[in-house]
Length: 261
Image 1 (cartoon, rainbow, N blue to C red):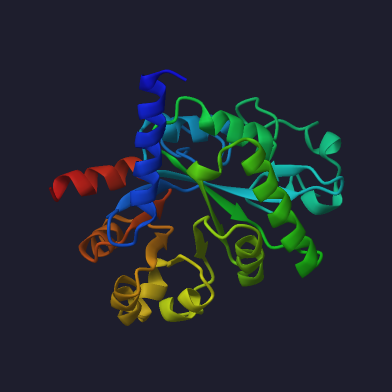
Image 2 (image 1 turned 135 degrees about the vertical axis):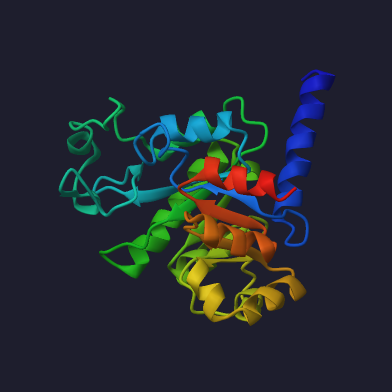
């Protein structure tokens, strides 16, 4: 590896380490399911991920399910084209295309695309709780972590989930990766006790519990809010200096941030 490549890789690693520090990154934009809305791209598509990377956004979120034949795929809902993903084989799912002609991407394909010419966009991997069993959800998490490590993308990825046990399972197999909890029913001190790095709650949770904002900062817990699409709500989060803001409107959020400089 030449000197330039070494420097570039080191710089990206430093950027991500800064992003994981709860007192460093402020109001960083995370595109929810990729940057899809403005250009009418399919959510969770490789095209929406690449657009987030092209916009040089600090983060892009995506959702992982496991099919009946153990393929890890990217989709938000439990079903795809009216088929339950967990009860359907991958070859049956890909008979139906996304609106832009893409096939339903596998996690391997998605992460491979996310690594390409990506100098600053964190890949925010949401592991969906299984609708079959808690154990299946934890098994899916293990397979997702293994895939991301196999692709040597673990340094540019973090994990989020509504299932607390999924996060604890990931921590058991990876002591270093960044984890954020989504459900909104635990205080920052509670997640810190379980070695979870962040609270990634709907913005209304923080409006109901504003004391959690200071508690998170005092305990060096990452603050992230979803899904912040309205300018008024964006301004409220910006004023409280969250680490990350997850949105379907990354272009609007960028405008709001630039207006306050």
